[in-house]
Image (cartoon, rainbow, N blue to C red; front, side, top):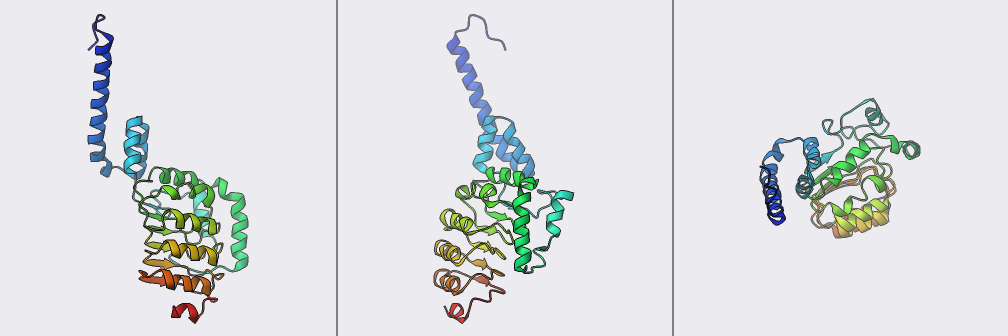
Length: 257
């Protein structure tokens, strides 16, 4: 209904304020009801409705789990399927790369990461899931550029308990230090197979911070020595499963601890 031209301005402002409050209240009631029935992509799109919906979506988060191997969330195309058919292979068929093959992939990635279509999608999903994400699976995402794609997000993942960064060539001690500093107290499961850019120093800091780890996989990390093995034995007192396949520099000294 149109206001009478003689209606005081204060009354018009009060009506507008009341309508805005009612609209916000309806959003807070209806959005949580429909949210479980929406796909992750649809939940993300809800942010575009209005600023209030965006605030609600970000406060709740759009998903509890992100898995780059989920072809519904990350559809395969000719461009995206090619990197999964490289020498590193599938997580269902674990294998260890030769040093030359590993270095070739790192050199290749430094020139191609910016062109990968899933990197921007991943960053958007992470940004919209700060308050809800409990599981992040990134294994075999060869084109991932950690400083750009995941480092800015790690300090905000307040519920993350499970992380898989296996076989990502550009993972280094810098990433491990951020994990230790920001999610170490909550992390319970960590897979980091074949992360050969991580040193003993990174592992030592990791296990000192992530002392609630129940599952740890550092297989095929040939650079690690007893410095890592002893630190794991001394700090991870709640560990239930440990995988260290082909870490030939680790000796019985670590096993004893």
